[in-house]
Image 1 (cartoon, rainbow, N blue to C red):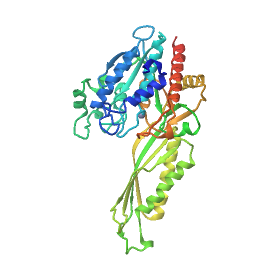
Image 2 (image 1 turned 90 degrees about the vertical axis):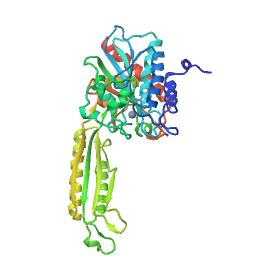
Image 3 (image 1 turned 60 degrees about the vertical axis):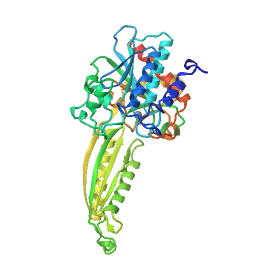
Image 4 (image 1 turned 90 degrees about the horizontal axis):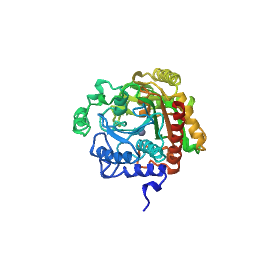
Length: 417
Ligand SMILES: [Zn+2]
């Protein structure tokens, strides 16, 4: 039998994610679903606690049920470099979205501890309990708690069984309040998150690693087209004000505008409802969503304006009315330029080309930017597939990520020496 210490850290990080992919670490017998404050979450915390302790950390559970392992620096009580990601999952999830970043953090500390090394700062590994909104209709609850950016209304939510967030927390071993997990100012020097890319860019370019420049700015709109419902058999074509054919043109306009922009501009119509929705009635009303993202807020805003103008024109030509309401505006969250440079150097030092890219998806790092400077390392995943059991990473890539993270820690140590 191979002992854990004979396996390179990257492969061990992957193997541990795999181990958490089955019972008792899932709430469902035949798929991976680990939701916040569930039995599966508690079981995962037990496993993680053991791995953190084995790596040389002292471990605590904070009031938001985040597991935090601390590896002291050269002087006690020094501010900490935070490394982490989330351990909750979507329903029928893959095994690496989230946990891989936590396992890599543990491996960083295990390597430093094995070499007897202490840095000018402490290192804390954070396993956030909720990022996906896995149980309650609110996401990134745990990083928001740590960053101290929770609004009061965030707490007034219930799961699908009617159990409130506060009650669920109380029933969990942590038994605290989310807001009590906020870190004191000055105790965190940076936050580093490693995460699978969840997109196809690195694989397409034959690269194992990418340095994230920031998380895309996001705008969401809800649009309503009002035409005129009519009998499908008797309403002659010239007399129609068909809301769905207008919507079809609008969807294509959204796609065209995004395609004409820079590579990181994306726009999506992901949800549409047609009323009255009968086979023999000309559609009178269509509601649809529009999601626009880019790493650059100006690019995003310009695209949104162009979309508005194009849709207004289509509505006018087709004699339907269009109402568009903005429902979400998330600012871009840039990673720290100095930390990006360090991560670039660290990636180059393990023999990998430096590729910078924007994250189209949201991550805990975006929230943690309110607390301290952040850096993010992306790892290639097969086919860009994620939020799916087919999610897959190569242990060799994860090993490269581990070495790059250790190189980053070294360089950060030199800066703080
Ligand atoms: Zn994730």
